[in-house]
Amino acid sequence: METAEASSNLKKIQVQRFKPESDPDETYLTEETGIWSWLTTVDHKKIGIMYLASITFFFFIGGLMALLLRTELWTPAKTFIEANTYNQLFTLHGSIMIFLFLVPSVPAALGNFILPMQLGAKDVAFPRLNLLSYYLYLAGAGIAVFAILNGGIDTGWTFYTPYSTSTGGAVTTMTFGVFVIGFSSILTGVNFITTIHKMRAPGLTWDKLPLFCWGLYATSIIQILATPVLAITLALVAMERILGIGIFDPALGGDPVLYQHFFWFYSHPAVYIMIVPGFGVVSEVITTFSRKHIFGYWAIALSSLAIAFIGFLVWGHHMFVSGQAALASMVFSFLTFLVGIPTGIKMFNWTATLYKGSIDLKSPLLYIFGFFFLFLVGGLTGIVLASIALDVHLHDTYYVVAHFHFVMVGGMVMAFLAGLHYWWPKIAGKMYNEILAKIACAIIFIGFNVTFLPQFVMGSQGMPRRYFNYIEQFQPFHQVSTIGSYILGFGFVMVFYYLVKSIFRGEKAPANPWGSRSLEWQVASPPPLHNFHHTPVIVNGPYDYHKPMDEFQLGLAESGNGHGHESDAELHTDGKSIEAE
Image 1 (spheres, one colour):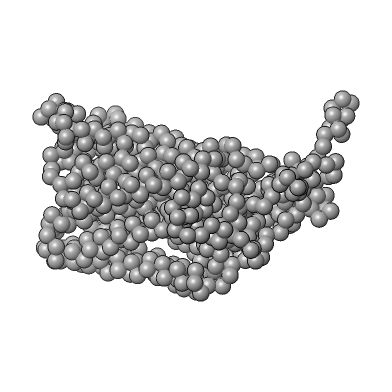
Image 2 (spheres, one colour; image 1 turned 90 degrees about the vertical axis):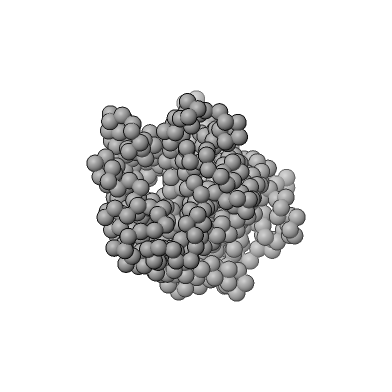
């Protein structure tokens, strides 16, 4: 009886339906203009766009280096560059693509733009820290560019000792650049975790959190825990080169294998820093274009956390031939097989979501279909490499190169392109050419397979990676791979062309062109400066496509002081009563 009286005395929040503006007067792009407003902004959307522009620039620089590498490998001997230049090119290609593109691509670019809007927040928890993380990224990139111009670096992107502690070049400068970039990654992770915990809109419980947010949450945990290990490791390499202390150098009492333990303890979780946010993009795109509730919500959400946890325990599978104990290799092999389980759970649940869905074959979904095939090949070949008996023979061959690119480019880059196409109308407020997008998707898919499938064959036949010269029997495979790289490069240039063109000549994007139920699509395109003119109220989950759109455009009614006011009225939209949890 007392409980009933208490409930009746509680004031209920009055909410109203707020349709997204079709033609907003002010957006985040127009409210504050000028170069200085961009350089000093704390708006998460502008910071996300600056990240997007930066990673796109470095992606094309790294891609150009890849084309130079493939062109050089057209013939078994020297084609047009020297051996030392070749070593520097593959080092810089790997370093730029991993540290300056793949690691920050989805979290720092798309995540920065989309995460607060999916949570119903006006910004991230620490806006100034967000801007600092971008400038740390730029500072680290600038130091890395200085290292390239000031002697170069030819150690490979892994900076393996004892070579990296004894060779010439700007190894110390380059490792310092990566050291600084690591702090950017850590700050982004801290910001995202705090934002997800503290900035969610009323009613946005953990079981209504978009799976993209779950992916960023798991990624942030890895960034915070793993990145300091890389920073310490690279600092030790620099100290050994500068001060001559014996940490990794056997002549000074050090152990070069210790470096591998340190490095891979970060760098294998770093693979999941790159790919887990991509998994979140896949979940968002599949539900939107199949018009279905995601199958196995909690299985997908918790499998992201499981991948983050197990990812810290498998670094030793990179070291099966380093002389580690047989028992240790067996344990690492088992754990590597184990990490395939949560990934498999995602694949099966995504497939089940598509089953009997109302499929709309727009370009973002086509990129996801490409992701399915390419990432599946990458995952299955990873299981092959987890087998010790096979890995001993395939280690440091082109088989590993192909596997890594199928996971990172076939998986991560395809997911990134899917997310970029999916959220482009929200980011730019313009629609791109859908026909060109589909053609580019097909070109990228074909070019990628032509490039990397021959490398599996070469690797299985014993072609070592990172070799400047090779025996003539591999020349046909290398030439096919080189042709594929040019097809792939053309596809990426085509994507850049029609997206940039859409900014100037594209049709104006509606607020919700895909008919999604997620919260970021319930505001105008492009969004206002502070995302929402009202505080959103969450009644339904982001994948409840069986419920009408009216129930997703809810917010606290505005009053004179800008805050929602309380009344005894029931929760309603346009007078329609709705039950709220």
